[in-house]
Length: 365
Ligand SMILES: *Cc1c(COP(=O)(O)O)cnc(C)c1O
Image 1 (tube, rainbow, N blue to C red):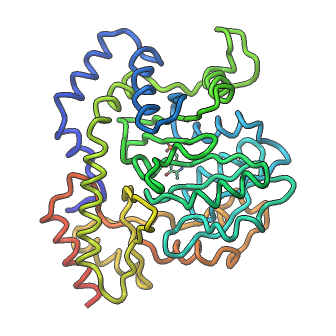
Image 2 (image 1 turned 30 degrees about the vertical axis):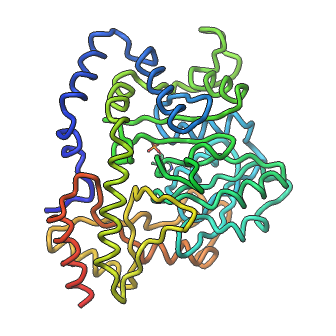
């Protein structure tokens, strides 16, 4: 059986360091925020070259807190890609604003920058590019459109940790960046965890307040906030894993290139890496008109695969209120019908990968 990811393999590869970090935290008596969290925030801020990092309970909370800090709410619109994890849309809705979808580029699956302008109205407050699958969105045109229209840019970098755009790290390019350390992400905790980053000290202070009940001073709420703190155990685990993330991403890239080499066959559309991009292959996504049959065939051979995502957000139940319909975003909808993630994680062995390659080739015939 070949799984899509193998979190146990990664744990075993650095078990001693992780166990020591966990035990030291148990002995420290600090479990919410505290020195472990501060240290991890500093590591990520330095890595991305951003001044302020604020550890949170999840990537979903990171999006909510970023939107709240930018005063986005009732009556506002936020431009997001039509193909993404539901949280990108759901968080916009949860603060009372309306997600306005823009179709994706059919090759890179990133928001189509040529279609953003026509989605902007007087109500638009922000754009959320998502670095989907670990490939950066085309940030320069997005930042230019945002500047011209006085909009904020929130990067949803949940899948792009370590990715680069013209040599600059994703997560350092917008007004605020959101990270998720969900266990399967390229840098993953052993539970939920997230972070927001910004260079703006006022936004950083506001997000820090929102993280803990809107407190400026303990117990003195200035506004309604959340309980969304990164806990010390997760921070300690993440700090122990952090020094390995670049080499893990390199491994992902090597395996992805190896897939590309062996799966270049008619009937399978391979992922692209734009010339300005460093892709970190959070997911290795191929495309086939016979996707469902391919997935069933792989399953029968003991090979896991997964669809990210079978339903574009505009066709989800919560978005029905906006009246979007099938056919509104054809590239997002086609991706939902045809894309498939193959097993890819740093510890995947070449023998395992060969098995996946052979099975896909056998299917294609
Ligand atoms: C994982 C993910 C999130 C949400 O992160 P959680 O930590 O699971 O809340 C948001 N956006 C995208 C694109 C994601 O992949």
